[in-house]
Image (cartoon, rainbow, N blue to C red; front, side, top):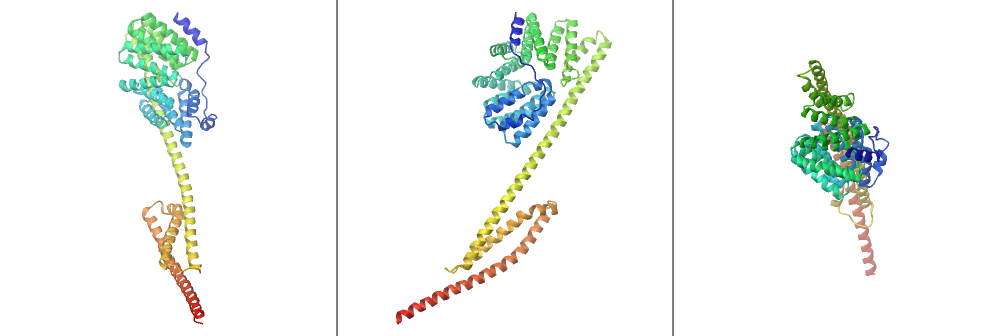
Length: 463
């Protein structure tokens, strides 16, 4: 009956894992969107399925998103990109890089205060902690996801939270709790007609009932998960359910059935990005054949070795890709810093020129003005200010040239600046002497004119 209901539901929707897309054409539209929630939804829609079909291309798109987001100072896109990179590193077996990227994502998401983003990033972080068997952290994060996803009506994330708790509690051998959350996940998916990643939810239920000893229910859920994996054409989902079903039959001592599904689990991910997932079923086949068939044992021993190598190579590739990407980010940041520094330098030069012009105008005005007497000390003070401004102006103007010539040597840079000062100071003294002489002469003329005027006025009175 459950299978009939399930088939009716999945046929009522037309979701399927999308073909790998390139994010380049969508980035301008995403970056121009002002609403944080809308921008998050656009990203979530684009990245909804590509990790299930091609994690390498998905990572490349995430890297492009990260570069553009950092360039535009878009924290929503930056946190989302780090979270997606963390998810893909996990899929390819690199738990260390997964944790590193997911932690970055959560920190940035907290800066934004966007609830959807926080739920999304904490959910992906919880998966990595689960892989590290840090169950207290995993459960704490997933409970946050469930509670806050319900508040903001982000029901997709709520189903992910329930599913994650079911897996965590099952690994902790708390089967009753695992069953509770697996059922809640299933019921919410049915209620909201949400069937993305549904094969994993059904596999969870099969695993729980397998552990509870409900063989018929376990097989029923595994069969539904297989149908869902075929419908979505997801080799990863099919590998997981085939492996789970093989383990179930092996535990029930039904070796032929265990061999059948373990072989399917190996075959479905061969020559795909998920070839490392053949590790567990190959190990199961190796263990089964050790005592019964030496030729088959040898064959699956080789497959197990290749899968191990594949996992190692995937980690190495991802590590190299991450290093290359981080170097690219550093270069981009360095280039942006240089551009900003150059803009700042140009602006400072303009300010210095403006200040020098103002001071020079004041000095010239004071010297040439014939209306009032000026204190020579004021001219001396303004002259010192002008000297400092000129020195700073020349420093700003010549700094890039001096850096190239001296190769950033502090000693040579200091010597060059001392030489500039040695040229400026004598020049300043000459100008100051000239200005003072002019000022004294001007003051004498003003006093003389004032005296003549006074004498004239006094002469007129005595008459």
